[in-house]
Image (cartoon, rainbow, N blue to C red; front, top):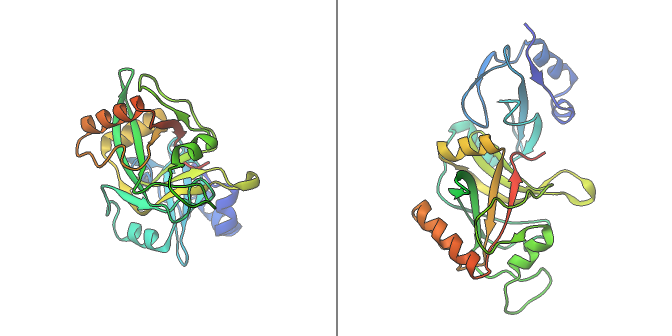
Length: 263
């Protein structure tokens, strides 16, 4: 029987009209599935379901998600990421580093990204804390100094002096949570093009059930960024919060709320 599937123009262009029509007719689409975002069961016969196509260098995998979790879209990932996801969902965890192209910071910069829940105004919010492993200077310049925060302020992040309210939403940026894991922080593409990865995990990062539930509840993630040496690797969320408060008080923290998913 026909499925309640959303197949975006981008997905249709990749898989072809014939395959897209077969999916919509229910020939190749599963009835029940595990949502590629929240990892809870879904039923394409009973609820709106998005088709999400993960495309690597040589391989493509079609996945399904609750329409409320992810829109139908094409997600570019590395072949290594795609093969790892096929072999095992949840193969990575902890902290990862990645390049940050498209002008915000130099490509060779290494960013440490830590996930955690942060209490703001009496409610838990999913958060990402980004801290480079070394000072970052403005592209095209050399010498001492650290331009990481000014570069992010130019992108729309706001300086934060105390963590008493949820920072403003930064439209055009987003956090891609797919296959139940954290894949990337996306920023606007040039000239109105598709979003591009500002940071991308070498391997998708596993997040806690509580973090993922909070992200799906709020449909956004709070991103905090601090210069090298400001936060450090904190083993507990209460210590991470203390480090954030200290960085904010010292004028070494910027933040924004980023919508969930890269559309």
